[in-house]
Image (tube, rainbow, N blue to C red):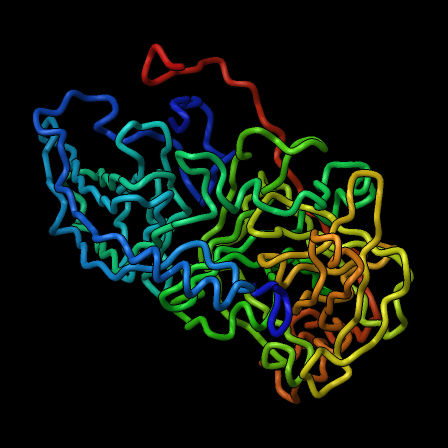
Length: 482
């Protein structure tokens, strides 16, 4: 069912001796929790038991609104630093720990409404088996909103550990919500949704269909959207501006973000390079690199009903060079594109590519009042017949030269045989530019053309990647490890 509004949407036990600039980086620094390397006399944290949600009621809600790819519900909690059990190690280091448990969760995200780490402090999040670890998070993760969010940690138990010199002032830490993932994570009975859940017609980005789009894919991101009491997936793209300065603007759809508050957006999580390495579907979920937090810059179109449905945000932190991202170029031409692709995360799955081989057509979004959308029909290719799905919302549409020309609002396409040739609708980049309103908060132009060059299109821009140096040493914990 895809009418109305569519597509809204350790450590792995190995601790490498070089800096954590790879894999699960969320502006993390190197290191392991103090408790991993020391036999503490009291190594059991305080346990905060959180009642699980009513999954039967949630299933009914999802059935009534199937097109919004919600994978988690947010549960209010009240857990502060005073709820940590604290130990002084060797008279010099504070080790403070607490645990959150919510029975049956496939994964948990932590939302902090108060977050301030002093210099020299480190915060870690991990599961009790110590097979998955996030951190160290440091004062580099502080922001002006004093908020923070962690990417999803699998399982229904997480431990939060704080390490700091005894001379450091106490941190400001308060967890106000957890995202309880009930789908979108590999569960005990196998893959449910999310990774591996997109339709079998979809084509992985590293199949032959994606070979000409290897630059563009580096700008595409899966977005974990916090929207009040819901958490859902959308897709977005880094976009270049006429200064070619790497300012981390991300463009997605207005219907993904319009119900999120400023604080919600400061807790969005952006997964960059979330893809399989080869053409066949991977048997295990790929590593996830993520960035937390953004600020809304501009929006327009009221979800497509009065315009072109765009939402522009700016990441709160610079993207590390090691992420090797690409800021996609764009074209604001109104001439229909003959061929091209979209790159997206259907159902929150790894990156896919769908191809169109017939010209796009300027149309009204169904129910919309402006001629502000491109209608697209997808084609069969060597490895499938890619379409779009919930979770693809906001994904970039590219023309044959690799320029971004639109963002996904919705449509009727699907992997069902009856849906393969049905159309989708992308808000026109040319309409995003300056036609949704007269002020800077309803246009892309002031932000993507800050020097007023008045160009019709610009090329993409690549952030250089650092060369990794081989390390002379490797430490493994625990040992032995499977």
